[in-house]
Length: 80
Image 1 (cartoon, helix red, strand yellow):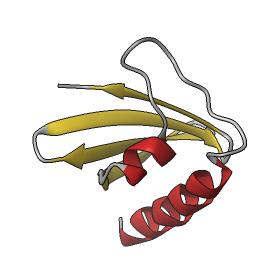
Image 2 (image 1 turned 30 degrees about the vertical axis):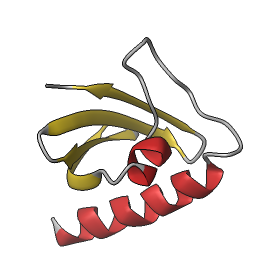
Image 3 (image 1 turned 60 degrees about the horizontal axis):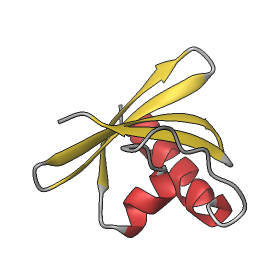
């Protein structure tokens, strides 16, 4: 699990850098990992899902599940 967390942090840093290039946003409650990271959300867990990762981010009592496609495409939805 520490290796997955480290890999996810590296991917998040890369995604945040690429955030200015392109983001995929879904629906009214959709956002991106880069936007959430800039708002102070922290990665709490990550799990592989085929060729993608599902990353769970949390800040206080608000949580999001993000599908990490690649460094320029993330899709996050609020889960609470």
